[in-house]
Length: 421
Ligand SMILES: Cc1cc2nc3c(=O)[nH]c(=O)nc-3n(C[C@H](O)[C@H](O)[C@H](O)COP(=O)(O)OP(=O)(O)OC[C@H]3O[C@@H](n4cnc5c(N)ncnc54)[C@H](O)[C@@H]3O)c2cc1C
Image 1 (spheres, rainbow, N blue to C red):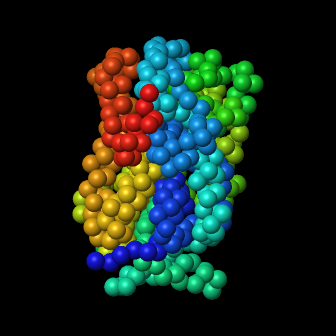
Image 2 (image 1 turned 90 degrees about the horizontal axis):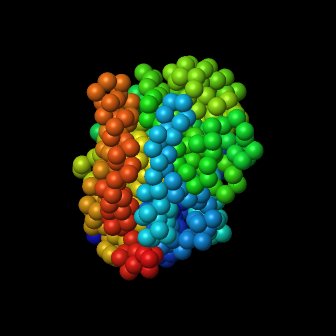
């Protein structure tokens, strides 16, 4: 059986960076190749960082840094389309109290800074390396990059594709590859700086340690992110097409503005999304089509090449678990490699067996929640209005969350016990 001593990780997103940190500690020779010339601070902006992802980073020794990064959520408000709070609960803080990891808002670039530091110190992070071709043979994997004059092909024992939802690695290793599926929903999301100085926002939105959600028109959500008084808001809406892609920033801004105007007409004037959009700096406004990937049920690897994160199980954002799933993948893959003495085939099979069900549940749950949030069917709308507050207040929610976020979190049990109170 082939044994891996050197690895190339393709993609410097949260998954690839976490894996590089994990594998570096095993003594492997690690290189990470990222196509961008640097990490752009606004990319991905803010995100909801779940306790299981934070617990994984704590297990890796990043507990203090992660704690500083997250603005914890204690309170959960459900508001109506006038910004009035119709239900509120402290349930979210209950499981945080048990384990000391709260659901929270973080800035993606700040997490990337933490993860990339050890890699830069070890000179294993290679920017401006866009993979265009991968060839495997019996002894190894050869990787070619765009701009072949400057970047010579690289040869390694093992390659991990952590290159996101539109993965090149997936296309290279599987002859039959279904493209990512468009959910017919798009999202606008923005970051508002200096939130405590903003007087035009509804008070229900700007409270500290509070997650605010409105489910009357798609999903509107807002929460504070990071530690510098910033607020993130996002609103999803139905659409027949995703935003067109173009790299020209002026064009993006113009196109965003045109689509933003149309998007705002979908919400009543009283809806808080109008206030949020009005005071968001247009350079801090992101606009995405929402895609997911159907799970492959024929393994995530071929010989020496394996997938991780969004490249194999990209999810819609409705349960806020995409980043945490990629982090968990990295830990499980490392544990499997160690358990199988770095024999790739058995380690990859074990990794797939452990991760398939858990990641599929997240992808499926997000997809159903998206359909539920967006349905305009009067019966579903009535159920939504009645069910949402009941679920928010129920113990069942805490139990489900605890099971999903802690009990099934894949770090070794002895570490979980250390974190439990
Ligand atoms: C609108 C939206 C909101 C979201 N909100 C949340 C949230 O609140 N909480 C949460 O946990 N998750 C959220 N997610 C999901 C989360 O962002 C992803 O699941 C997570 O980032 C996956 O990480 P990854 O490392 O697998 O992929 P990515 O973060 O996509 O990283 C892939 C990397 O690979 C690089 N790359 C691509 N192709 C190549 C190539 N050919 N050569 C070299 N490099 C390449 C890219 O430049 C990129 O840096 C959201 C996603 C979206 C779209």
